[in-house]
Image (cartoon, rainbow, N blue to C red):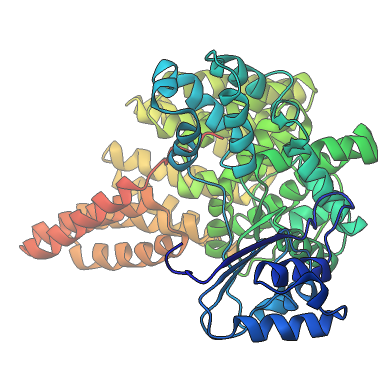
Length: 591
């Protein structure tokens, strides 16, 4: 402490000691006596004590540490005279009254794993660490960076002469769990969290307890509002209070996170204070919010598609989207959250309904890993619950995912199952969809005649039933097949009718797909300028949707046109764009 040669003063206000508090007056008296004031010379009045303390410490280089403060007013009397003293105040609150007087807030976040390991290792010593480093690593991970938890774990191990890190790791990660295992004499993680929890406003305490069941990495105000059945403004106030006392971490605009041990404690409180029924009901409300939000986004992304509709109202407001691109961006950013909820509710209708509502995202952004894993997880639940429409929609979507990654045999099996279910249920709209999908598999495998026959059967049904979108999709596939067979005279009418339908229903994604096929037809006819114009139009539409797979195809076609016209610099630029779009396909999001 060479920076403070003229004194270091420490006082504990015991603001979180369960009713045993230390007054600022008593602490200030101790400070004055430590500075040499005779006991009988210490003023009785707090204001006089403060004046004397500031007078004695003016121009002195001293350090004052005030621990466990709960309010700024308790600290103000303990401030020394200027200008050379340093005051350090620790608190679970942010103490804005001190900030208003020039204090600087330093939030102590959970320690990184390496720092936590070093803390425990520093207590135990190198020899002890060398005996079972893997078990100690597990202990540190179970403490999740919480300094108190790390100190308690280190204290337990240091007090035993034998190396018992493996036993402690087993207790922390299994039974009885970290909240029951991290305890030394009268210190424990549970006791510390109990004190913080009991000082909360009842509304904030309930919100914390009920949002603790959220399975994702972090949550929004709307998710917490759904859990606690609160208005958004009241939820936001509660989360701000919880953030001020460091029971939730504010990550940024409308993003909050619970520390792992705080989550466990709050989950216990939810069951103890409100019961298992209300705890589980809160979990369902959060899942229903994600279903409602997914449907809101999907209806903007693909407004005319056949889908499973909502079965109830949203428990909290969901976002509103102005365009397909913004809806896709939001759904993509929240995909890890959707998947976490789906994994939690995979055995319930909520799980498969959320997956089905994400179809627009999977189709446009091609997250194949998440696409296949989520559908395979929940399609059996839809079948077990007798929800034929859900099962067939999911089977068709799963088959298209298999088709997209080249697993044609798997795609054929899934589409054949869907076709059988559609026919058994008398669902002729679904039957046409399955026939069209089987045609895609045959087309991908080079069976062009069989593919065309399946597409014609699908088209007959769609024309009879007045299914405009299905008709347009099938005509597009018939045009692709005709191009592959060299029957360009058959291709153009299908493309013209498909484009007209897609434009009439506002399906910009499929309008762009028609333009891509029309460009290929133009190239066959030697109309390179027309092909480039069509591809540029498709590029604009697909760019607004950030549809990387289709964008890669468009840039590859533009590169080919550039080569034909001798512009190798332009070709290189398009090929670089191909590589960029392909690198973004199918990120490893699996829940």
